[in-house]
Amino acid sequence: MTNESPSIRTDSEDCAENGGCAETRMDSIYKYLDGALDAQDFDEVRGHIEDCTECQSEHDLEVIIRDVVRRSCDEKAPETLKNKIMDRIEELKTS
Image: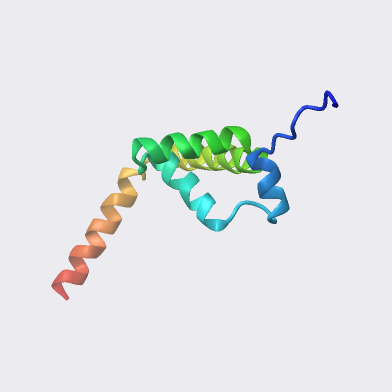
C-alpha cells in the first residue's frame, strides 16, 4: 500500500490539455462580467475562473479593458462641437 494521494485534476489542467478554454467558455466569462447569468451559472463560471489560471488571466484582462473603456467614455464633447453638429443636422434637414 502506498501513501500516494490521488491525483486531483483542476479545470486549468483540463483547459491546457484541450488547447485552452473553448470560445463558449469565454462567452460565459463575458456574460459573467455583464451580470447576465442566473445564480447557478454565475457560481459555476466564478468557480471555473478561480480554478483556471488561463480563464483567470482572460477575466482580469477583460476587467482592465472594460475599466479603460469606461473611463474613456466619461469624456464629454466640447459644447462647440455639439453646436456644430446640431447646426449641420439642421442644414441637412432643410436642404
